[in-house]
Length: 234
Ligand SMILES: C[S@@+](CC[C@H](N)C(=O)[O-])C[C@H]1O[C@@H](n2cnc3c(N)ncnc32)[C@H](O)[C@@H]1O
Image (tube, rainbow, N blue to C red; front, side, top):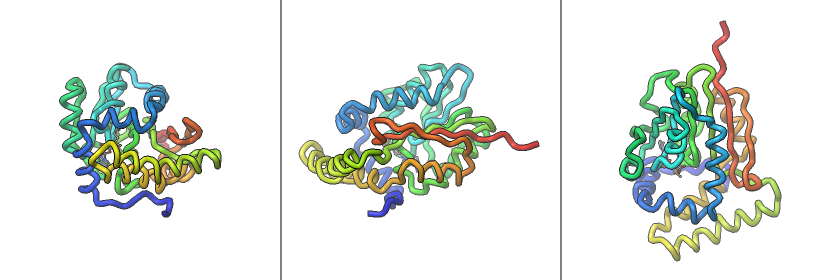
């Protein structure tokens, strides 16, 4: 399989997330062997939300990460295009402002947010660079981007074990525990097809982001990328 993001009809992606919305947070914990809690804590520190800041949490799903940024004092907008995920998020986290929107055509004015962030969502968006450009457009000058996403393990042994887990063990486990086998197949396939750390950093730069860097977590299974929108030259 090529390492370009997996192409799928956006309506099919939205429908798949609608179907898993009810058990989504629990599935994340189990499929990541509870590592997601540590990955979210690192992302939360990178976002550095605080009172007076406006944060866009894109592809926010049920708002698990949005709720943390709100607890840190920021005004948070959680945006997603799956009506099922939005409904589950509004039910579970009524304190968060959920907005329906497509990452490739965001329903926000230019230069609205201090931080734009996306956790485990960019891989699912059909049109990676367009989404990065939209995030750039709605960030204010001097604003920041934080992306948490599955990535490529650094060590060859971990890479081999992980691709076995994603390509073979996870789909089999999915067939045993869930009727939605398509979602488990897609999870593994989309991670294996996703650009590695350096390639994603290059795509961020292509979209205009500067001071781009990343931090590997759990040996590179996840990477947290960061960047900044420069001030215009006078
Ligand atoms: C794996 S979930 C991540 C949810 C959440 N950010 C989290 O950390 O748990 C991916 C989310 O991306 C959303 N998504 C995929 N493509 C999108 C798009 N083009 N615009 C908005 N949301 C999108 C899906 O609906 C889904 O809720």
